Amino acid sequence: MSTPDAALRYLDPIVISQLKNMELRARLIVEGFITGLHKSPYHGFSVEFAEHRPYNPGDELRHVDWKVYAKTDRHYVKQYEEETNLRHYVVLDTSPSMRYRHTAPVTKLEYGAYLAAALHFLMIKQRDASGLMAFDERIHTLRPPKSTPGYLRQLLATLQHLADTPPAGQRTSAAAVLNEVAERIARRSLVVVITDLFENIAAHDDLLKALRHLRYRGHEVLVFHVLESETERRFRFPDVPMLFRDLETGEEITLQPAQLRENYAEAVRLFSERFRRRCREFNVDFLELDTAEPYNTALLAYLNKRRTLL
Image (cartoon, rainbow, N blue to C red):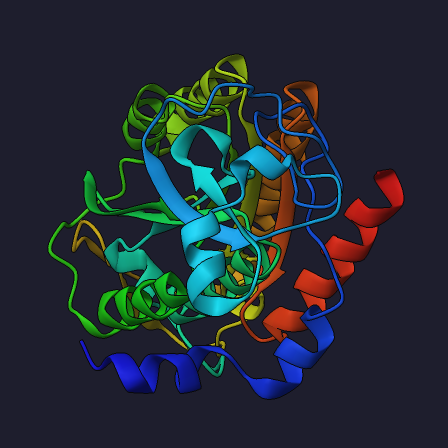
């Protein structure tokens, strides 16, 4: 991993300037608090020490670390693992289909990595714990949530490594992975899933059940559906016989795009509408993103939308 380059690659100064005054707050009930906005629901400090944070007016003086004060002449409060802020996980699909780019500036995986980087920055900036899971057929990468500023660089380096490394798995098993995520995350958290939903059609119901499983466990869930819309939603390929190969199964088929374009686009539209409707029933946010469009535009629009709901 080339750690120094990761911060430059994924944190565009223009995007950061747009994000710096925004807060992503959990709309549903989650354990924890956002510093300065909520009181901690925990009263015991007998759990494992996690980190220091600056003293805020209203904090109990008995939790001030006086040894640190003696050395720095500044007030810091001991923060324990059980007292940390909102926990946030990005669950990123790294399956072979996410390597598709066509004429977009970046692949779907790179687009997802940029989104993840912005979210990690946003959460750690507001002192929330942010973590990362990456999957294809299984969860192959896990970075537990932490809220220390230095942890951001590690997360960015991991994202760069994931985007630059050829896939190991050959298929997507999002449903099984999300069920595992629901069981592995003990405390209620904000879970952001970034995927192209390229799952076997028969597995779509299982995927929806897995999202419902996450909600049943008390997590707030956001799904970013990332596609290259020109071809993957509208099937706008040249009107000549073309060979298509499935990036995950390797299956090939030759066809004339014009013969299928209308039916294909309608099938994708119906799928998206059904998926969005079912997500709404489970109180899961579902947002479609196009890799040809700037990721920060969509992200900022979504954050503004959420802010109006709080």
